[in-house]
Image (cartoon, rainbow, N blue to C red; front, side, top):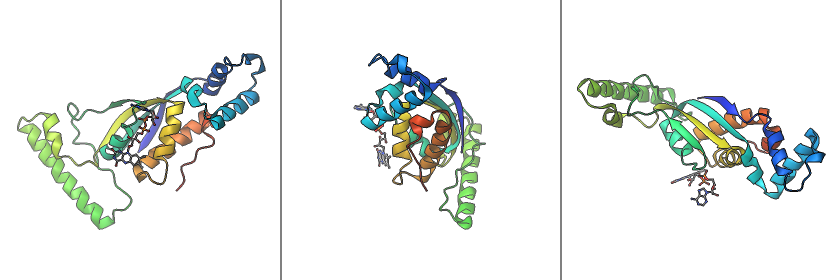
Amino acid sequence: MKVELLAITPDAEGVIARCARVSHRSEGKATPEADAKLIRRLIELGHESVLEFATATFLVEGISRAAANQLTRHRLASFVQESQRYVDVRERGLVRPPTFSEDQWRKAVSLHRRAVELYQNLISAGLPKEDARYILPIGTETRLTVSANFREWRHIIRLRGSRAAQWEIRQLAREVLRILKQHAPTVFGDLEVNG
Ligand SMILES: Cc1cc2nc3c(=O)[nH]c(=O)nc-3n(C[C@H](O)[C@H](O)[C@H](O)COP(=O)(O)OP(=O)(O)OC[C@H]3O[C@@H](n4cnc5c(N)ncnc54)[C@H](O)[C@@H]3O)c2cc1C
């Protein structure tokens, strides 16, 4: 899986603090240290609505349809996903779950190859891609863009990075968090995706 940051609010933490300070007219007290302290305090108090003033957009490639289905359940995020109705996906690989042994994976790849062959034959026979795709496995790779504000990213990372979540979406949560921590260490510094 490849996760690439496409866009992020410039000076995101400065913007969040600037907006938060309107409430107490404390703009005159703004310094990077005071802003970080303010943001940490607001998060501790659960006043996370100010985090909505910053957003981040990612391109995710090589994620399975199975994991993409989980991610797109997050209603406050925005998505564009590659359409299997219009794009010929015979080149798309199969995502390998870590639990597969070599022998199990060889069999899965062989089955996938046969499914892709049939997919190709169905298209050659005149079926539309949107129907031919029905025989492709749920582990088939897809690509998507996802955009969300920082409040929603914290929510997604907490839910999808927890040990209760599946390995692949946890991998995504870990990578998104790693990138967001570089750009907004105060907002995301208290979150971890362990294991
Ligand atoms: C470990 C795990 C297992 C799961 N298993 C299943 C499963 O077996 N089957 C299944 O169907 N789903 C499953 N889910 C998906 C889960 O039920 C949620 O649909 C998904 O995690 C999105 O969460 P959310 O609604 O909190 O987040 P978002 O859609 O991202 O929303 C963020 C927050 O906004 C608020 N919000 C959003 N929309 C509304 C609304 N309409 N009304 C009121 N408040 C709203 C809520 O506070 C919500 O928490 C699973 C999720 C996890 C993490």
